[in-house]
Length: 197
Image 1 (cartoon, helix red, strand yellow):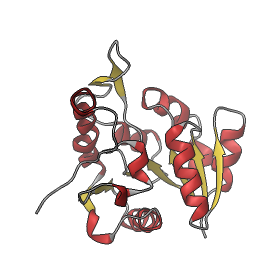
Image 2 (cartoon, one colour):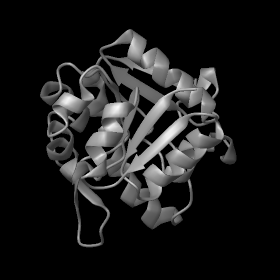
Image 3 (spheres, rainbow, N blue to C red):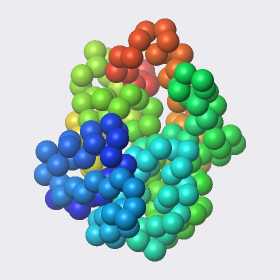
Image 4 (cartoon, rainbow, N blue to C red):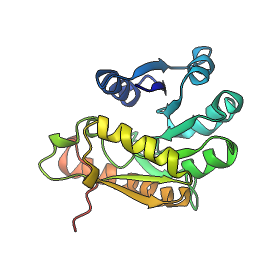
């Protein structure tokens, strides 16, 4: 059992919190302040499921509470178009994960679960084809802990790909630009990026 704080109580955060609780972890969900700092302080792993366009400001304010914790970043920082779907990246030439790691140097950041629609995060076997999930981060032990959480969420070891350092999050975050086009083409049905080998 791991103590986990999920920051963000929308569809993504709620879905992750429910699944991790069912897997036997002690999970606290925090929306906006004042509960956010207390939740982060008491957890071993903190999951960022806040809107990506405000994540950096929110989490940088928790620098002391996040020191020594593992921060799992599942958000994508985008500029939305008129229809509310992602139209561009907020940090072109970088990534939200890199920005978080720079702002929180004493907190290992691991990027994952950001290349799929939210229902797939906790039920990857729902898809008719094998999905892929990726890990980006500098700390091998932090990535190992996050890999174990992914397995608890139903991801098989063979579906998990460690891409390397935090800079590789640029690639997975850019994949969000596929999403609006896929939704417009196929409707709002669960899907994920898949690497076929």
